[in-house]
Amino acid sequence: MIEKGKQLTLSQRIIIEEMLNQRHRKYEIANELDKTQSTIAREINRHKIIKPHNIYKTSNMFNCKYFANCKICTDKCRIYQPISCKDRDRNIGACNNCPKLKTCNLDKYFYHAKEAQKKYEYTLTDSRQGVNLNTSELIELAHIICPLIKKGQSIYTILNNHPEINLCEKTIYNYIELGLFKDWDVTNLTLKRKVRRRLPKKKLKKRKEPMNYNGRTYTDYLEYKIQNPNITTTEMDTVYNNQSGPYIQTFIFENTEFMIGLLHKEKTSDSMSEGLNMLQDKLTTQEYEQLFSVLLTDRGTEFIKAQQFEINIHTGEVKGKIFYCDPMQASQKPHVENNHNFIREILPNGKDWSHLTQEKLDLMFSHINSTPRENLGGKTPYEVFTFIYGKELANKLNIQRIEKDEVTTNPHLLK
Image 1 (spheres, rainbow, N blue to C red):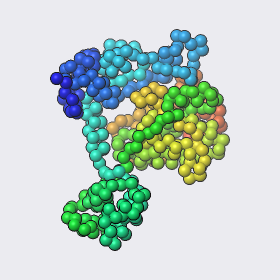
Image 2 (image 1 turned 90 degrees about the vertical axis):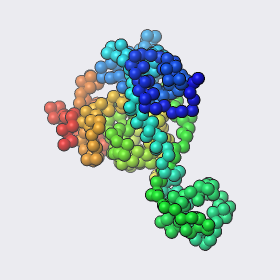
Image 3 (image 1 turned 30 degrees about the horizontal axis):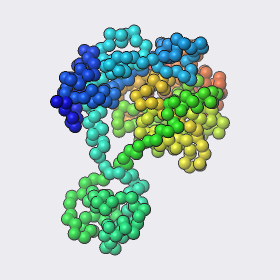
Image 4 (image 1 turned 90 degrees about the horizontal axis):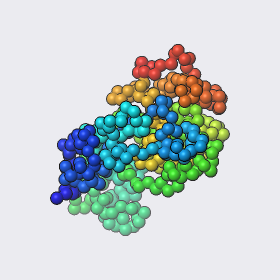
């Protein structure tokens, strides 16, 4: 009998990894664990780790499913679609121990049981922490209800007289019991017929709201590029070593391979969009439109507030348009993904990033942009960028030219 309604354990995930290493199909793994095939498929899709193909050794054109029938093919093709692998995408779901690994030029996906368990445990605890409020919402709510509670009004009366509060009576009582309003001298003792309990520390955390991607999907992006072929795309992503930060917001301009990064303490849409606001204030309107008219990124939570990336909330100016790649399709923004390899050479995985400053990031990207690229005909991204846009714009982005023999792309650069 197929087991339903129970989460996978670490031992079961280890079995999944072992059977994937033996190239068993998903239905065989499902039979072994007494689970449905859809459960195994979701587990692999959620937790598999992508290793993008290296575009510096293999051009995108040879990985495009339209390549055989295309008369003219370039790396910047607007209808580029990666070739699918039956074993990777359907039968098995991952590339663990695939006999074609060394010769395969496609993106590769690997499933590791311990990494999957860590990701699951983090998601489980993260979803149960805190309350569904941010600091500003808490302050606004407190200013309404706390003076009325001190006047002796019940929670029911307050909510009845203030329909703008979109919370139920039980939720307000729970927030008071959690001690969220103790800074306004409202606790359980303030309420009628309430027993005093130990007040835990406040943990404010706004829960995620479902994102509407209508008009901003990757298909919409391809159609927009066909209608506006002269507009340059900028790919955007986030790099970090620890869930607690710091975080590097990366931008790469597809036509030049020129990359910049901004340092953030928070991985939120507010923080990331504020980085764009800063760039918009720093650059002229023409310069900003040349570089940031079209953003292409993944569906990470830090980019979920699309309107903040399209409109400057301080000035009301239109920034541009933002589009989102399909889920689990990092290959749709290959330039920024592959250029992260340069960052990882200087800032290796597992190392502490607390010493980072924006000045160090600018130095790092100056060295990265001064590294010659084969797909640029031996030119550096800095040379191509300044040829098109000029040195003054590169200076505004805090990127300098590094002499060829002085270029350093290892951890010693930032020490």
